[in-house]
Length: 291
Image (cartoon, rainbow, N blue to C red; front, top):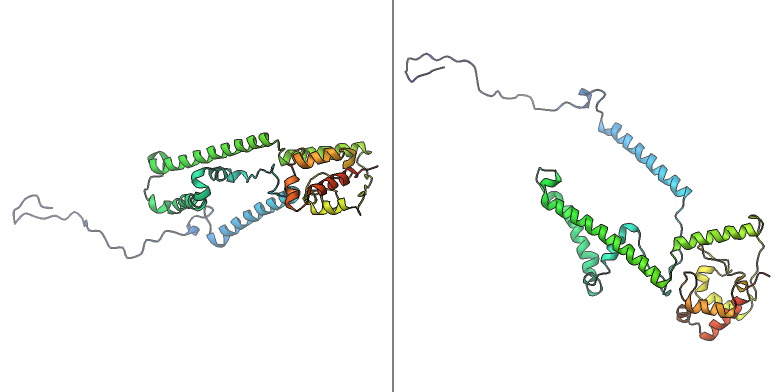
């Protein structure tokens, strides 16, 4: 090590500062170097993941078998009291499509344009946001967009549900789940009144050879109450309806609706049934008595 610029000064070497060339590649140790703390991805880890997936799938199957999804009432677009309603996770999009700037002539923008931009932004997010920072308060643009989207979805969902409840109240429609609960309660009460749930007396159709029965088969009534008048999809039976309502009351039900069911007169006329045939239908239904 020299301290001056003299040619005869003694030079002392204290070490070699040169970086030595690595002769072997730098390979991290595999899972076997950490006994009890790691394992092979294939097949050990993957097999465990599959087993967990099988357990979850079996759990879902058990729930589906125990609590089957109920079938809704038959959709009838001709029924004026029908209010379409999607599942809760689509309520925000359902409400969004009600606004004039994304419906009507702009429906393509609402159904493809805006959702396409949102999903496209999600797909491009890893390529657009390449920063190393992952704390949300250090990423103002991405965080602002995320919170704005969440707030919009929650707001649209709440507004959609409020509009749905308002529509039910204005039209006097009873929601399907409430109607089903009432029908189950009525069936239980009828079973108790008939002797504690024993076999109920079979009621036959009255006047099966009359023109009223042919009109009934052509009418929209058969979609919900079946050709045998016993009802289906949770709808009430029409057997014995003459004990509850006379002809005038049945005509009023057809023209104005009843207990959540919308008016059926227009739907019947759309099927080619005349006013005279509607009158015959009401007269025939009034004959359906249990005694």
